[in-house]
Length: 237
Image (cartoon, rainbow, N blue to C red; front, side):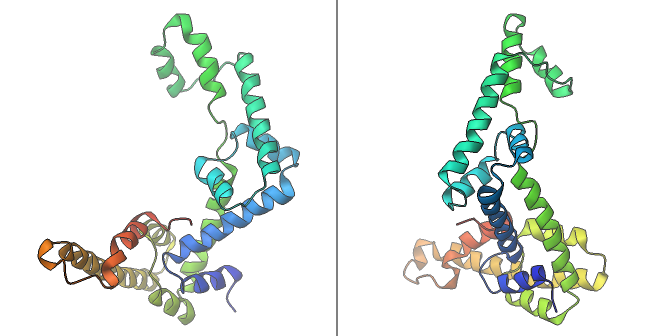
């Protein structure tokens, strides 16, 4: 009986694009949805979000665009962030001594250094995005489930019939592999998929030549879009 993560991966293999991207995105969206509806008033989380200045741009707009949060939740979180930023702008805080700060201060005229230090420090997140942290934890579990599952026929068959992993997740998978048979299998599956995609791109480029403009496009018509997804990862819709 596969784990719930392995089951999700097998199901994701039936959908377009990288299955790891799809399962990872699902985990991120569930986390955000839960955060907004159950944790917005959690004191420790609010402190953490103040330190990270809310979410990173990717995850803030993911939550907005997919309506994973509600207007009140956003208002509460970003009221905290803006209030904290204003407080820091009004009271001088000595930045920690780091190479970055030392190098920066050497470039700032002395007569404005105090103000500039205070503003830059106030506008610099002191913690990483909490959703990025959760995503990285989820990705570790997903990759481990995939690699472990490649000892089972069901996972092998699912991956073979899928579009395969994007290159960033293919790299992650190889970093987790400890078995030569699994490594060879992963490489064989993905080399074939990359060769097929390269062939479709070649056909697409050829058909854009004015001499072949009347031939029309087949399956290769969206190969350029799939190539972007293959190299960078699935696009969140």
